[in-house]
Image (cartoon, rainbow, N blue to C red):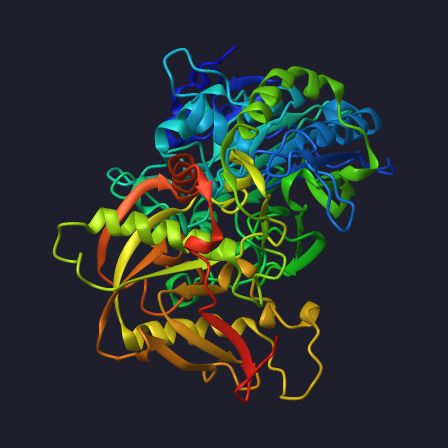
Length: 605
């Protein structure tokens, strides 16, 4: 049953006043005065209280321990499990052990995008329809009993109306102190929530949770947020809100931040240190006790950062993505000088593969799950050959050619009849998953969708031959330098400097070699277009995904290049639609070896 969020939060929250919860009921934040009392008396032992804050992050639409792209139970090399149904079992155990009243449960964002389950309820049977369904993630998180969740950048992928509808369906606030209304510069979401925990000593503990999201939203989801919302830095907003929360009587301040722990960025100069700023927040903003970290898809059980001003440790923890881990922050408090103060904080993570799924959660959403399984198994065409991405990181494979072929055709149609139609057309694609594949015979939605697990859309940008060469050189940093004659181990050949697979691009429409014996920056050789050496001054249209075009991966030139065309539909859908229209996928039509790895002119493979 959809809940009106406003009846839960009160209108002040949406206007940016935050929300305070006392004993489960909403009360004005300023009504939480300090508890009375003095010290702990002469000779009497001090009053103590312990509580636990549980945290998840980057759930990305995972409720069931299921992979909708392979249509079977999720599995990986480390035997991890995924999904809120598993998290629910862990949460129940912790609540049983600690006492439910001594626990809180929060999330650090990226909730409503990532699986075909979340896609289905954003696009196929959208929650925004007049009598639309309740989002499965809202249903599951409500049933588990979340207290708050920070906004992630992927919350904005489907546009603000879908996010607002999801927010309305949640029985807990979505927090974003640095998601501001572009016109008024006031918070567009509640910045914080204050929860009261009853202690045996008649002195409640007030726990403030401040939510911070990623400033990169302004770049990555520009089309959805430009002119509507703005996203200032995490440190400046934390510095504004933490003292306010302390002055309102918060005994404990926890930040839920959709931002990685280290000050690095895959966006280079566009987002210097602000993409992964949780560590900087801990170091620079006094008054924070712990930070639940998200966004980076890393597992950090416990990481301590010393605050420069106070000299106190701030404890950070990031549970692994998709519900693979649950963070526990354990707080020990002592009553002294008329108030609760934090004596000790520790963090650990629990592994969801140690428990069974909670039947309450799987039972709640079994119908939604079946609908989506049936949807992804729809046959949309046939393929004349089996194709896989297993070797795509080091060989020119037909499946990556298929993505580039579809993108090239789509952009060509988009530019037809216009001033850019006569320019030569190139296309970039990455190997997003080394386990994607299309079988010989029937091709389903899940097969086609598995080639493109991200919600990226397609653009056309104008680049020169010289810029394309720079782009390819930058991409080729992905390979570990390997001397001619040295043995080649494919398990150690790629991901130099931790560059992820999705930040290695191949470009179709050209031919080139990548000499991995050479240092990064000097690897692209024999670069030619239509059989001739590439003219540095020639102009090309590059079909490129919006992540790359908006600076994702910090590839040179593309973010500043002129946009010639853009398509609001996901590339994944474009591939599905193409297969449906063609009916037959025949590699003979699009597959060709346009690039190869070499060493001193000799092919590696």
